[in-house]
Image (cartoon, rainbow, N blue to C red):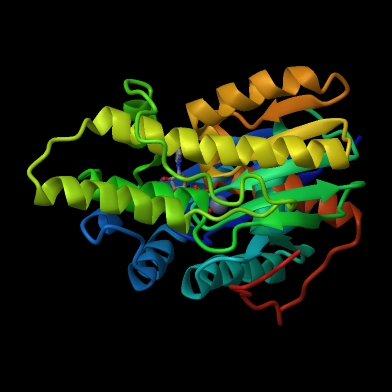
Length: 335
Ligand code: KG4
Ligand code: ZN
């Protein structure tokens, strides 16, 4: 059988990434050039800075991805690229590079939704079994996605305000932790106790939506109030209480979704899927769902990367998705 080789691109935020994926599920290379250090002094991603870094990095990433995979342009079957959602200037660099490669080498171009990429990262470990559910939690998104079959995505719940990762990054700043704060807050949380009992917004509401801005405000007010009266609060307990509130809501809503939409597989994906507390809690909860297998995307593939875009791209290619030279970045792209 001829090898199916996708050259995939991901530049929607602050990682420049190019990968080569074989048959939709084997990573031959996955080059990720991170820009985190350049954004840290601003406390978050600066879109213009992100675009400039992508321009500088993209050709080097393409060359490295081909070299590491030990393939040439002539070996490729298709080119896949994230075209949204994300930062428009950042997306445009990947889209333009992918269009150029596809045009120059007469390859089909496949447009990929970034969130479909996060979900299909699961495929790089094991085939996805349908119907499936995905909890996608990242810096920009918090969504419960029901997939009755391959290439069908139904958003059944989403955040009404901040994304889970965004809330981590914002409360991290109050604790004096650099962007991105998710991992250090997660580590701190494991050394503390849930003593503050922060609000669990919408937890008992009869829907699958989330809200994290009230939790974030409660956290910030607690710290500021303590500052005013010169009281020292335990950073570990603050982190543990915040994390417990986030995990409670994410896990409870996921439980409710699995009861209403029985599935063969639950996929936990996105940057926040690396959260130890969330992984432990979902693993525990899933014991009650005997017919549902839990697929925790490996830590190395939770954050933004092009391998996941190649995994989704190969599936989309089979389903006939094609773009031409008019493909544009779509920062607000929905499923
Ligand atoms: O998916 P991702 O790399 O980029 C987006 O598409 O947003 O996710 C990045 C987000 C950041 O907000 C970061 O703080 C968060 O994922 N994150 C975590 C952890 N590791 C990364 N949040 C909670 N716990 C973690 N261990
Ligand atoms: Zn992402």
